[in-house]
Image 1 (tube, one colour):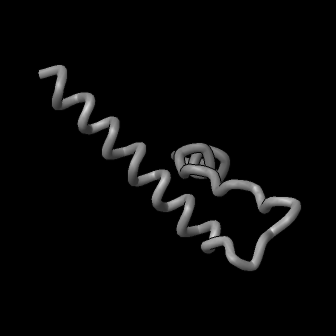
Image 2 (tube, one colour):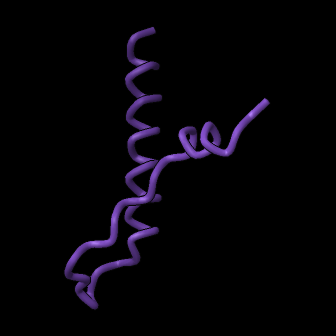
Length: 51
């Protein structure tokens, strides 16, 4: 049985809103999505190099 607490732990957390948000900054969701994809790619790349 899954509880709401366990579902929240499995999802990556979004970064906190910065204190000062500059108008020229890209959307924070975009930055977070790019970081998540790059980290996943690096993890897969490292696993492939080991084998």
